[in-house]
Each structure stands twice: as structure tokens, then as C-alpha cells.
Image (tube, rainbow over all chains, first blue to last red; front, top):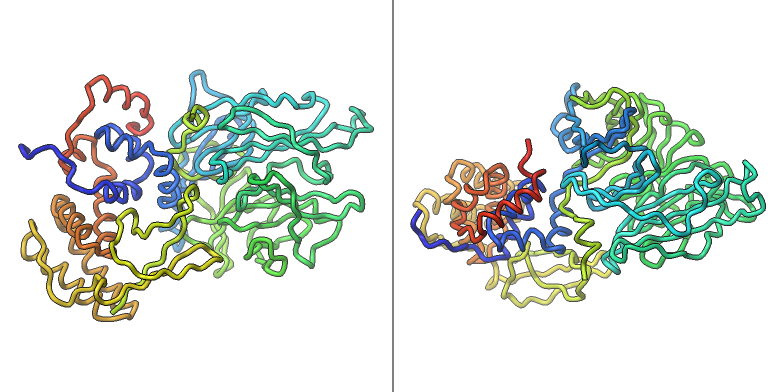
Amino acid sequence: MSTPARNNLPTEITEAILRLLPAKSLGRFKSVSKTWDLLISNPQFIKTHLHRHKTSKLILVSDTKSLYSLGINELLPYLNSDDIPATAKELSFRSPPMRWEEILGSCNGLVLAKDVNDTIFLMNPTTQELLNIPPSPFALPDRESFVMYGFGYDSSTDDYKVISISFWDTDNEHNPDCTDMFVSVYSLRNNSWRKLRDSPYDHAVGHLISGVLINQSLHWLTSTRPGYSSTIVAFSLVNEEFNEIDLPDSIANDKAVFNELVDLGGKLGLFGTGVGNDLWVMEEYGVGESWTRVCIHGVEIDPVKPVCLVEGSDRDIVLGDEDGVVVYNIDERRCRDVRMIGGPSGFAIGGMYVESLESPKHIRTAP
Amino acid sequence: MSQTVVLEQNAVETQSITLKFDGCSSDANPSPIVNPENQSITIKFDDQASNHHTIPVSIPNVDSETEAAVNEFLRKHGSSDEESVRTDAMNDLWSFIERQEIGTVVVLVKFASDVKNFELLEIFCQRVADVIAKKTVEEVREIFNIANDFTPEEEQAIRDEHRWAFED
């Protein structure tokens, strides 16, 4: 073409089109022109893009310590058929390959994970960016303590934070008189840890598990002290304080702490051996009366655990365990297997993430 | 007939809320009704500012068949408040533009932006996005008539940094 080389569309329109594209296309189109590179790299654009174009993936940790992604969006067209295929893809970051132990959290396309040496990393599985998170200077000795993490985004400071809650392994006589629950927070922007006030709750009861992120707060099941009644605590990433969330009335007892929490399409979910094959969903955040019971048929909750909703359908729940992934439809009360194409034979489900262009490196070095 | 637009607060850093559809601003000056619960804003456009034309519009740089299809959409979509009629109109227009060359759709995007018709803009932008998603960088430059202002070294550096986007 010999026409003058000019972008004819207004910037806002170009942006509107770009916002509809998958992350991979955007990664390529950064090299279209300097204008497009600036548009696509803009932190505000990245945020609006990830909310507009939601492509969700499950993240799996294989028995061989590798990471895999499993496309959940792909499931949507197959939900009415008997065969639900999903493609698994290995996630690689470095050579020689990393060896992964556990996924600790996920937010806006960023995933927090721990390798086999207990080193924490922040990654973007889509862009293969990997950042080492320095250990907390407040950490207790490894073998004498326990630590739980939580990860999320604080919109008030446009920052990503990692929370750690640690305590002595008093059962094994490590500092047995100290039952303090130490809390510290890592800021990605500042690349540093800060010690916060101790948590008044007993996080040593119940599961050693990462906080569940809902509405910029991290949630755990804990026991109050003294009294030891179970409660859900919500740690706000914004004001860095703990609040309590009501449990469903019918299960509010001192055993509720042994259940588990999950993020179901932005709503807090609760499940576990204490509540059998029921899944409780908090329809309205913070409103105790809005807890709704969903009965799951055809699969045993725990070990098969709810992981997330199928993107695009709030009537289909994805559940899984080390043997496989299934989809449960609430209306049909039917559970169907997901046929994994590729992928590891043995794995643990680490959670889910959305595809995004969010870059931990750029956030950490931002002025 | 009035058109209602609902906006949600996406910009968390700024306190101001601009009347936009995916970035396209409107000059219309209606009074917004803010819902404090979910931060959404409802604006009703009156007939004068309405984007529903009953008189056929003229669209530069497209053939008569395309102009007719767009006008048919505007007529049908604007003729009724019923969900099913509007959805039919959208589906018809969507099927039509799926058969058109990408160049035509880009012209239509520009047109919809110029006349500030948000429904047309949404359809045409989505179609363009669907088509260019799998295209190469060179093809995209040609479609949008964009000059490559990178030096070969600069371009290679960006590609190296984003190897993940060129895989598969």
C-alpha cells in the first residue's frame, strides 16, 4: 500500500479493540509500533484488559514438581456434552527447570508459589515472568515453625502484597510457651517486608493453608481466643486488619474451623468433612444470612475439592483431586469428568489464574 | 426513543468518572444518576442525542450493500425496546460483517466512532478483535495502516522479551 502510514483510528478506539484481545496477541502486537507498545504496556490498560478479557486456567503441581496449566474457558462449549476435553500445558520459566512444591495464591494473573527449597516466587504464567520474593526478615526458623501465606492486590496503593502468618511448632516443643501468631506483609512496590501486629486468633487450629482472596481481603478459618469458637477471619489488604465473617448459622460450632474456604467466582465458599457433601456459598459478601447451601451429588467432596467456577457459567463448579478434574452442574445435579489432554498423570490442583499482562518486574521498579 | 448507558467505575486511582464507552467519549450532556451501592452510573440520552436514527445514514468508503446492512440494523434496533428484536438485529448485522473484508470493518469502526453509536462500535470492535487475534504483526500493520517506527534492533528486542507471545 502506498497510502501514508498513519493510524487512522482514534487512540481510544484502538484501545477498545486491544482490550478485547487475548494476552498472547497483545504480547505480539507490542512490536507493531511505538504507539501500540505504549498502549499495551500501560498499567491502567493492563488492569482493564484483564477484567474485560477473562481467560481462566487451572494451575496444577505435578508429582514430578512441575507446573501445568489447564484451560477452563475451553470447557464452556462442552458443558452440555458428555465429553469435556481440556488441554494441559507445561509451564516453564527457567533452564534448568524449577521444581515446585506448592501454589500459595493467585491474583490478576499473578501466581505466588513456593519451590522445593521453600523459596517464594511471584510469576505470571502467561508471560513466563518470574520474580524471586526475598525471605521475610521476621521469619521463624524453618523446622521449628509453621507459616501460612496469602497474596492479593491492594487497590488503595496499587500494590501487590504477600502476607505471612507464622507460629512456633509448640507441639514439638519448639518455644512451647509462645503461642503468638506473627504477621508480616511484603509489598511488591517497595520490595520489602514489614512486621504487623500479631493476629489475635489461633491459626494453628485447622489446616495450614493459604488465605482465600475475596474483595481484597484474605480469608482463613480460625479459632477465637480464648473460647475457641470457630470463625472466618478476613485480613484486609487495604487497611491490614483482621475482621470476622459470620459462618452459616447451622454450622457455627467449634468444629467449623476444620473445614476449608474457596473462591467461587468472587464469592466466598465453604466446604469440608464437617459439612459432608454440601458447599456453602456466601451470596452477599459479609452478610451471614446470605449463606446458601448447594448440595453436590455424584462426587465426594474432600477429597474432591471445589476449585472455582467455569468462566462464563455460574452454575458449573470445577472440582478436583489428585486423580482428575470434574465439572458439577448445580441445576442438573450432575458431575462429569474432564478429559485431560496432555498433562501429568499425578498432580495436585493449586488453584486458578486469569491470563494477563501484569508484570511484577515493572511494578517493583516503578518510581 | 431514549438510550440508556450504564457505567461502572473501573478507574480506581482517579475520583472522576468520565462518560465513555470503552474509551469513546460522548459530547452529550445528560444528568447522571449515581447508584452509590455499586458505583454504577445511569445516563439517559434524550432523542436529540440519541444514536438511533430512523433516517438512513450515509457511510463513507463502504459499498451500498454494507451501508444498507448497517441502516437495516439501525432501523430494526431502534424500532423496538424488545430484547428479542434487538438481539435479532445484532445477530443479523454480526452475520453480515463476518462475511466482509477486515478493511471494511475497520472503516465501519471509524464510522461508528465518528457518529458515537455505541452499539455499532461494540459489534465492529469485537469483529476486528476476533479477526486480528491470530494475525501477524506485519498483517496488523497493514490492516490499520500503521508505520513501523521501530528500528530493526528495537523490534527484535521487543520480540525477544516477549518470546512467549510468538510461541506455539
